[in-house]
Amino acid sequence: MGCLQILLALALSSIIASGVEAAKHNLIVGTFSTNFLYTIEYDDETEALSLVAKTEVPAASSWITLNKDATKLYGTDWNAQEPSFVSYDVSDPRNIKHEATIVAGRGCAGCKSVFVSARRTAPYTVYGSYYYGDARCGTVMSVDRAGALDRVVQDYTYAAGSAVHGTAFSSPPDERFLFSADTPGDAIWTHAVDGTSGAVRPLGRAPAPAPGSHPRHLAVHGAGRYVYAVLEGTSQVAQYAVSDAGALSFDGVTFPLLREGADAAADFWADEVALAAGGRLLWATNRARDRARRGYVAAFALEPDGAIARQLFLRPTSSSGGFANSVAPSPADDAVVALTDNSTGFVQIWHVDRGLVANLDIEDGGGCCANAVWLS
Ligand SMILES: *[C@@H]1O[C@H](CO)[C@@H](O)[C@H](O)[C@H]1NC(C)=O
Image 1: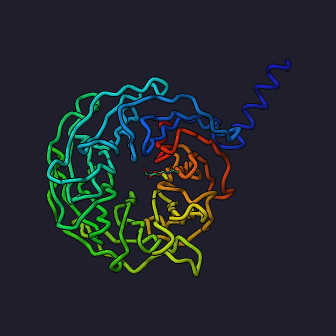
Image 2: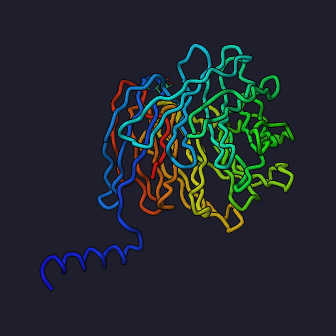
Protein backbone atom coordinates (compact mmCIF):
# COMPACT_ATOMS: atom_id res chain seq x y z
CA MET A 1 0.00 0.00 0.00
CA GLY A 2 1.27 3.46 -0.82
CA CYS A 3 1.20 6.34 1.61
CA LEU A 4 -2.05 7.75 0.25
CA GLN A 5 -3.85 4.40 0.52
CA ILE A 6 -2.71 4.01 4.12
CA LEU A 7 -3.97 7.48 4.95
CA LEU A 8 -7.28 6.76 3.25
CA ALA A 9 -7.62 3.45 5.07
CA LEU A 10 -6.90 5.17 8.40
CA ALA A 11 -9.41 7.94 7.70
CA LEU A 12 -12.06 5.40 6.73
CA SER A 13 -11.48 3.26 9.82
CA SER A 14 -11.80 6.29 12.10
CA ILE A 15 -15.09 7.21 10.43
CA ILE A 16 -16.37 3.65 10.87
CA ALA A 17 -15.10 3.53 14.46
CA SER A 18 -16.91 6.71 15.44
CA GLY A 19 -20.08 5.58 13.67
CA VAL A 20 -20.80 9.15 12.57
CA GLU A 21 -19.21 10.78 9.59
CA ALA A 22 -17.35 13.92 10.58
CA ALA A 23 -19.06 16.94 9.12
CA LYS A 24 -19.41 20.68 9.16
CA HIS A 25 -22.80 22.07 10.13
CA ASN A 26 -24.27 25.49 9.43
CA LEU A 27 -26.36 27.41 11.93
CA ILE A 28 -28.06 30.80 11.76
CA VAL A 29 -28.36 32.98 14.86
CA GLY A 30 -30.72 35.94 15.36
CA THR A 31 -30.40 39.04 17.54
CA PHE A 32 -32.64 41.08 19.83
CA SER A 33 -31.78 44.61 18.89
CA THR A 34 -29.35 44.82 15.97
CA ASN A 35 -30.36 44.09 12.38
CA PHE A 36 -28.10 41.13 11.67
CA LEU A 37 -28.27 37.42 11.09
CA TYR A 38 -25.09 35.47 11.81
CA THR A 39 -24.19 32.32 9.89
CA ILE A 40 -21.86 30.09 11.85
CA GLU A 41 -20.22 26.76 11.19
CA TYR A 42 -19.71 23.91 13.64
CA ASP A 43 -17.03 21.38 12.76
CA ASP A 44 -17.97 18.29 14.73
CA GLU A 45 -14.52 16.74 14.30
CA THR A 46 -12.47 19.60 15.72
CA GLU A 47 -15.44 20.77 17.84
CA ALA A 48 -14.83 24.34 16.68
CA LEU A 49 -17.37 27.08 15.98
CA SER A 50 -16.57 29.80 13.48
CA LEU A 51 -18.35 32.82 12.04
CA VAL A 52 -18.79 32.49 8.28
CA ALA A 53 -21.16 35.38 7.47
CA LYS A 54 -22.70 38.46 9.07
CA THR A 55 -25.71 39.57 7.05
CA GLU A 56 -27.36 42.96 7.48
CA VAL A 57 -31.13 42.48 7.38
CA PRO A 58 -34.22 44.72 7.82
CA ALA A 59 -35.18 43.33 11.24
CA ALA A 60 -33.87 42.17 14.61
CA SER A 61 -35.36 38.72 15.17
CA SER A 62 -35.84 37.69 18.78
CA TRP A 63 -36.93 34.32 17.42
CA ILE A 64 -36.21 32.52 14.15
CA THR A 65 -37.39 29.20 12.75
CA LEU A 66 -36.84 27.22 9.54
CA ASN A 67 -39.24 25.65 7.09
CA LYS A 68 -39.16 21.88 6.67
CA ASP A 69 -36.51 21.92 3.95
CA ALA A 70 -34.29 24.48 5.72
CA THR A 71 -34.45 26.73 2.64
CA LYS A 72 -36.57 29.52 4.20
CA LEU A 73 -36.15 31.27 7.54
CA TYR A 74 -39.00 33.05 9.35
CA GLY A 75 -38.38 35.60 12.09
CA THR A 76 -40.01 38.11 14.39
CA ASP A 77 -39.39 41.82 13.88
CA TRP A 78 -38.70 42.65 17.52
CA ASN A 79 -38.32 46.42 17.08
CA ALA A 80 -41.05 47.03 14.50
CA GLN A 81 -43.49 49.88 15.09
CA GLU A 82 -46.30 47.56 14.02
CA PRO A 83 -45.91 43.88 14.94
CA SER A 84 -44.39 42.11 11.93
CA PHE A 85 -42.78 38.91 10.72
CA VAL A 86 -39.96 38.56 8.21
CA SER A 87 -39.06 35.87 5.71
CA TYR A 88 -35.66 35.04 4.17
CA ASP A 89 -34.24 32.67 1.62
CA VAL A 90 -31.39 30.76 3.29
CA SER A 91 -30.74 28.08 0.68
CA ASP A 92 -27.25 29.58 0.50
CA PRO A 93 -26.52 30.44 4.15
CA ARG A 94 -23.63 32.68 3.09
CA ASN A 95 -26.02 34.70 0.92
CA ILE A 96 -29.22 35.24 2.93
CA LYS A 97 -31.94 37.15 1.04
CA HIS A 98 -34.86 39.05 2.59
CA GLU A 99 -38.07 38.16 0.74
CA ALA A 100 -41.06 39.47 2.69
CA THR A 101 -42.23 41.42 5.71
CA ILE A 102 -45.79 40.81 6.90
CA VAL A 103 -47.57 43.15 9.32
CA ALA A 104 -49.96 41.21 11.56
CA GLY A 105 -51.66 41.20 14.95
CA ARG A 106 -53.13 44.65 14.30
CA GLY A 107 -55.96 44.05 16.77
CA CYS A 108 -53.53 43.94 19.69
CA ALA A 109 -52.34 47.41 20.69
CA GLY A 110 -48.73 47.82 21.78
CA CYS A 111 -47.70 44.20 21.25
CA LYS A 112 -44.43 42.90 19.75
CA SER A 113 -43.96 39.77 17.66
CA VAL A 114 -41.97 37.38 19.87
CA PHE A 115 -42.24 33.88 18.45
CA VAL A 116 -42.85 32.10 15.18
CA SER A 117 -43.31 28.43 14.28
CA ALA A 118 -43.80 26.69 10.93
CA ARG A 119 -45.83 23.60 10.09
CA ARG A 120 -43.69 20.83 8.63
CA THR A 121 -46.65 19.46 6.69
CA ALA A 122 -48.88 21.03 4.00
CA PRO A 123 -50.00 23.81 3.79
CA TYR A 124 -46.72 24.74 5.57
CA THR A 125 -48.43 27.70 7.27
CA VAL A 126 -46.52 29.86 9.74
CA TYR A 127 -47.84 30.84 13.20
CA GLY A 128 -46.95 34.11 14.92
CA SER A 129 -47.19 34.97 18.63
CA TYR A 130 -47.06 38.26 20.53
CA TYR A 131 -46.02 39.67 23.88
CA TYR A 132 -46.07 43.03 25.71
CA GLY A 133 -49.00 45.46 25.56
CA ASP A 134 -52.30 43.78 24.75
CA ALA A 135 -50.88 40.56 23.30
CA ARG A 136 -53.86 38.22 23.25
CA CYS A 137 -53.48 37.76 19.46
CA GLY A 138 -52.23 34.93 17.29
CA THR A 139 -51.66 34.95 13.53
CA VAL A 140 -51.66 32.29 10.83
CA MET A 141 -49.67 33.16 7.68
CA SER A 142 -49.57 31.36 4.36
CA VAL A 143 -46.44 30.76 2.29
CA ASP A 144 -45.96 30.82 -1.47
CA ARG A 145 -44.92 27.74 -3.48
CA ALA A 146 -41.26 28.27 -2.67
CA GLY A 147 -42.00 28.80 1.05
CA ALA A 148 -41.68 32.60 1.42
CA LEU A 149 -44.22 34.26 3.75
CA ASP A 150 -47.20 35.28 1.63
CA ARG A 151 -50.12 36.80 3.58
CA VAL A 152 -52.16 36.70 6.78
CA VAL A 153 -54.68 33.85 6.61
CA GLN A 154 -56.13 34.46 10.07
CA ASP A 155 -55.70 36.83 13.01
CA TYR A 156 -57.31 35.22 16.04
CA THR A 157 -57.47 35.94 19.75
CA TYR A 158 -56.92 33.88 22.90
CA ALA A 159 -58.51 35.51 26.00
CA ALA A 160 -58.24 38.79 27.90
CA GLY A 161 -54.88 38.75 29.70
CA SER A 162 -53.38 36.10 27.42
CA ALA A 163 -49.93 36.40 25.81
CA VAL A 164 -48.48 33.37 24.08
CA HIS A 165 -44.70 33.07 24.19
CA GLY A 166 -44.34 29.75 22.40
CA THR A 167 -46.30 27.36 20.21
CA ALA A 168 -45.75 23.78 19.04
CA PHE A 169 -47.62 21.35 16.78
CA SER A 170 -48.82 17.86 17.57
CA SER A 171 -46.74 15.17 15.91
CA PRO A 172 -46.39 14.78 12.16
CA PRO A 173 -47.57 13.42 9.80
CA ASP A 174 -50.75 15.42 10.40
CA GLU A 175 -49.91 18.16 12.95
CA ARG A 176 -53.62 18.31 13.73
CA PHE A 177 -53.25 20.46 16.86
CA LEU A 178 -51.50 23.68 17.72
CA PHE A 179 -50.49 24.03 21.38
CA SER A 180 -49.91 27.53 22.77
CA ALA A 181 -48.11 28.41 26.01
CA ASP A 182 -50.04 31.36 27.47
CA THR A 183 -47.50 32.76 29.93
CA PRO A 184 -49.44 35.39 31.94
CA GLY A 185 -52.70 33.46 31.38
CA ASP A 186 -51.15 30.42 33.14
CA ALA A 187 -52.55 28.00 30.58
CA ILE A 188 -51.75 25.84 27.58
CA TRP A 189 -54.26 26.08 24.74
CA THR A 190 -55.14 23.47 22.15
CA HIS A 191 -56.37 24.59 18.73
CA ALA A 192 -57.45 22.34 15.89
CA VAL A 193 -55.54 23.14 12.69
CA ASP A 194 -57.39 22.99 9.37
CA GLY A 195 -55.31 20.75 7.10
CA THR A 196 -56.17 22.77 3.98
CA SER A 197 -55.97 26.42 5.05
CA GLY A 198 -53.88 26.08 8.21
CA ALA A 199 -56.44 28.21 10.10
CA VAL A 200 -57.07 27.35 13.77
CA ARG A 201 -60.14 26.81 15.94
CA PRO A 202 -59.96 26.69 19.79
CA LEU A 203 -60.58 23.29 21.39
CA GLY A 204 -59.49 23.73 24.98
CA ARG A 205 -57.37 25.38 27.59
CA ALA A 206 -55.47 23.38 30.22
CA PRO A 207 -54.42 25.19 33.40
CA ALA A 208 -50.75 25.59 34.34
CA PRO A 209 -49.61 23.36 37.22
CA ALA A 210 -50.11 26.33 39.61
CA PRO A 211 -50.96 30.02 39.40
CA GLY A 212 -47.70 31.82 38.60
CA SER A 213 -46.11 28.82 36.80
CA HIS A 214 -46.14 30.87 33.58
CA PRO A 215 -45.69 28.27 30.81
CA ARG A 216 -43.36 29.78 28.21
CA HIS A 217 -42.25 27.30 25.55
CA LEU A 218 -43.41 23.82 24.57
CA ALA A 219 -41.99 20.65 23.01
CA VAL A 220 -44.09 17.79 21.68
CA HIS A 221 -42.97 14.14 21.64
CA GLY A 222 -43.30 12.34 18.31
CA ALA A 223 -45.17 9.37 19.80
CA GLY A 224 -48.04 11.79 20.39
CA ARG A 225 -48.67 11.16 24.08
CA TYR A 226 -46.74 13.93 25.86
CA VAL A 227 -46.18 17.67 25.72
CA TYR A 228 -43.46 19.31 27.84
CA ALA A 229 -43.68 22.90 29.06
CA VAL A 230 -40.93 25.05 30.50
CA LEU A 231 -42.40 27.10 33.35
CA GLU A 232 -40.84 30.54 33.45
CA GLY A 233 -42.35 31.47 36.83
CA THR A 234 -41.34 28.39 38.82
CA SER A 235 -38.18 27.33 36.88
CA GLN A 236 -39.47 23.85 36.11
CA VAL A 237 -40.19 21.46 33.27
CA ALA A 238 -43.73 20.05 33.44
CA GLN A 239 -45.07 16.99 31.64
CA TYR A 240 -48.59 17.03 30.15
CA ALA A 241 -50.44 14.02 28.76
CA VAL A 242 -52.24 14.47 25.41
CA SER A 243 -55.46 12.68 24.50
CA ASP A 244 -56.27 11.58 20.94
CA ALA A 245 -58.59 14.59 20.76
CA GLY A 246 -55.73 16.95 21.66
CA ALA A 247 -56.84 17.59 25.27
CA LEU A 248 -53.92 18.30 27.60
CA SER A 249 -53.75 17.33 31.25
CA PHE A 250 -50.89 18.05 33.65
CA ASP A 251 -49.91 14.66 35.00
CA GLY A 252 -48.17 15.83 38.18
CA VAL A 253 -44.61 15.42 36.89
CA THR A 254 -42.22 18.38 37.21
CA PHE A 255 -38.43 18.69 37.39
CA PRO A 256 -36.47 21.67 38.75
CA LEU A 257 -34.27 23.90 36.60
CA LEU A 258 -32.35 25.36 39.54
CA ARG A 259 -30.48 24.19 42.61
CA GLU A 260 -32.27 23.65 45.90
CA GLY A 261 -32.60 26.85 47.90
CA ALA A 262 -32.48 29.13 44.83
CA ASP A 263 -35.34 31.62 44.49
CA ALA A 264 -37.17 30.91 41.22
CA ALA A 265 -39.53 33.88 41.35
CA ALA A 266 -36.99 36.52 42.37
CA ASP A 267 -33.85 35.47 40.52
CA PHE A 268 -34.72 33.30 37.51
CA TRP A 269 -37.02 33.15 34.48
CA ALA A 270 -36.73 29.77 32.81
CA ASP A 271 -36.37 29.88 29.04
CA GLU A 272 -36.48 26.85 26.83
CA VAL A 273 -37.49 23.21 26.44
CA ALA A 274 -36.46 21.30 23.30
CA LEU A 275 -36.53 17.71 22.11
CA ALA A 276 -33.55 15.94 20.48
CA ALA A 277 -34.35 14.55 17.01
CA GLY A 278 -34.25 10.91 18.15
CA GLY A 279 -36.99 11.52 20.72
CA ARG A 280 -35.07 10.02 23.68
CA LEU A 281 -33.58 13.18 25.14
CA LEU A 282 -35.16 16.44 26.31
CA TRP A 283 -33.21 19.64 27.02
CA ALA A 284 -34.29 22.62 29.11
CA THR A 285 -32.70 25.87 30.25
CA ASN A 286 -33.06 28.55 32.88
CA ARG A 287 -31.93 32.20 32.80
CA ALA A 288 -30.83 34.36 35.71
CA ARG A 289 -32.29 37.86 35.95
CA ASP A 290 -29.09 39.30 37.40
CA ARG A 291 -25.91 39.27 35.29
CA ALA A 292 -23.89 38.28 38.37
CA ARG A 293 -25.76 34.96 38.59
CA ARG A 294 -25.56 32.03 36.17
CA GLY A 295 -28.36 30.19 34.40
CA TYR A 296 -28.75 26.42 34.08
CA VAL A 297 -28.94 23.79 31.40
CA ALA A 298 -30.54 20.39 32.05
CA ALA A 299 -31.20 17.22 30.10
CA PHE A 300 -33.72 14.44 30.68
CA ALA A 301 -33.87 10.84 29.48
CA LEU A 302 -37.21 9.87 27.95
CA GLU A 303 -39.00 6.53 27.74
CA PRO A 304 -39.83 5.37 24.17
CA ASP A 305 -43.39 6.73 24.62
CA GLY A 306 -41.98 10.12 25.66
CA ALA A 307 -42.57 9.97 29.42
CA ILE A 308 -39.70 11.64 31.30
CA ALA A 309 -37.67 8.83 32.89
CA ARG A 310 -35.14 10.93 34.84
CA GLN A 311 -33.13 14.12 34.95
CA LEU A 312 -29.61 13.42 33.67
CA PHE A 313 -27.96 16.61 34.93
CA LEU A 314 -28.43 20.22 35.92
CA ARG A 315 -25.37 22.33 35.16
CA PRO A 316 -24.74 26.06 35.56
CA THR A 317 -24.23 27.85 32.24
CA SER A 318 -21.29 30.22 31.69
CA SER A 319 -23.40 33.35 32.16
CA SER A 320 -26.87 34.52 33.17
CA GLY A 321 -27.95 33.93 29.57
CA GLY A 322 -29.36 37.46 29.38
CA PHE A 323 -32.67 37.32 27.51
CA ALA A 324 -31.64 34.04 25.86
CA ASN A 325 -29.96 30.85 27.17
CA SER A 326 -31.96 29.18 24.46
CA VAL A 327 -31.04 25.65 23.32
CA ALA A 328 -31.43 24.16 19.85
CA PRO A 329 -30.80 20.41 19.45
CA SER A 330 -28.70 19.36 16.46
CA PRO A 331 -30.62 17.46 13.76
CA ALA A 332 -27.45 15.43 13.08
CA ASP A 333 -26.38 14.39 16.57
CA ASP A 334 -28.81 13.77 19.42
CA ALA A 335 -26.05 14.38 21.99
CA VAL A 336 -25.49 18.01 20.99
CA VAL A 337 -27.26 21.39 21.32
CA ALA A 338 -26.43 25.00 20.44
CA LEU A 339 -26.91 27.45 23.33
CA THR A 340 -27.18 31.23 22.92
CA ASP A 341 -26.52 34.15 25.29
CA ASN A 342 -27.10 37.89 24.92
CA SER A 343 -25.58 39.06 28.21
CA THR A 344 -22.20 39.29 26.46
CA GLY A 345 -23.15 37.68 23.12
CA PHE A 346 -22.08 34.13 22.38
CA VAL A 347 -23.08 30.79 20.90
CA GLN A 348 -21.93 27.53 22.47
CA ILE A 349 -22.15 23.82 21.74
CA TRP A 350 -23.02 21.58 24.69
CA HIS A 351 -22.70 17.81 24.72
CA VAL A 352 -24.99 15.65 26.87
CA ASP A 353 -22.07 13.77 28.48
CA ARG A 354 -19.22 16.24 28.22
CA GLY A 355 -20.89 19.59 28.88
CA LEU A 356 -19.54 22.71 27.16
CA VAL A 357 -17.44 21.79 24.10
CA ALA A 358 -17.28 24.94 21.94
CA ASN A 359 -17.75 28.70 22.30
CA LEU A 360 -17.96 31.56 19.81
CA ASP A 361 -18.19 35.16 21.05
CA ILE A 362 -20.17 37.44 18.74
CA GLU A 363 -19.87 41.09 19.66
CA ASP A 364 -22.47 43.16 17.87
CA GLY A 365 -23.35 45.76 20.46
CA GLY A 366 -25.81 43.89 22.68
CA GLY A 367 -28.18 42.32 20.17
CA CYS A 368 -26.67 38.91 19.69
CA CYS A 369 -27.53 36.19 20.40
CA ALA A 370 -31.24 35.34 20.56
CA ASN A 371 -31.83 31.79 19.25
CA ALA A 372 -30.06 29.49 16.82
CA VAL A 373 -31.36 27.15 14.11
CA TRP A 374 -29.39 24.30 12.51
CA LEU A 375 -29.45 24.15 8.72
CA SER A 376 -27.75 20.74 8.74
C1 LIG B 1 -30.39 41.38 25.56
O1 LIG B 1 -31.60 41.62 24.88
C2 LIG B 1 -32.57 42.35 25.60
C3 LIG B 1 -33.84 42.39 24.78
O2 LIG B 1 -33.71 43.17 23.65
C4 LIG B 1 -32.04 43.73 25.93
O3 LIG B 1 -32.98 44.44 26.72
C5 LIG B 1 -30.73 43.60 26.68
O4 LIG B 1 -30.17 44.87 26.89
C6 LIG B 1 -29.74 42.71 25.90
N1 LIG B 1 -28.56 42.49 26.71
C7 LIG B 1 -27.44 43.18 26.53
C8 LIG B 1 -26.31 42.90 27.47
O5 LIG B 1 -27.29 44.00 25.66
